[in-house]
Image (cartoon, rainbow, N blue to C red):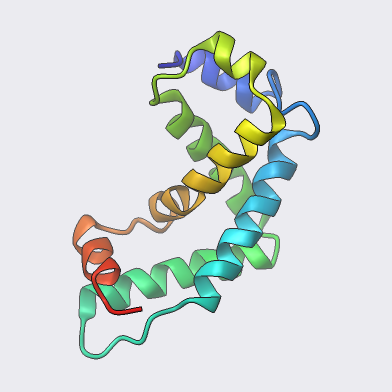
Length: 132
């Protein structure tokens, strides 16, 4: 786990992914995640929790696609908090490759969207259990 101070250092820009800055990486990852969510929305028939989840995630997705700067800063802060809660060490973060940063960002972006959208576990469960 990373300390709060280490998390703040990442937010401040050090360490960064080797080939780009964290904010740019999260912007592009967020746009890709938003497009994937919108392109794969499920058909919902009378399921309030699932509808609520979809509406909330759609809202975050559209904000991401329009380049909402406040959303981007929220995404970075939550992404770093998620990273900080893993078993990663400070040395591993400093030595991470571009591919490792990109993989983690891609794997955790929807999770970060869910935090931003304030979805509940019930909403997520109901949405995830709908047919594709």
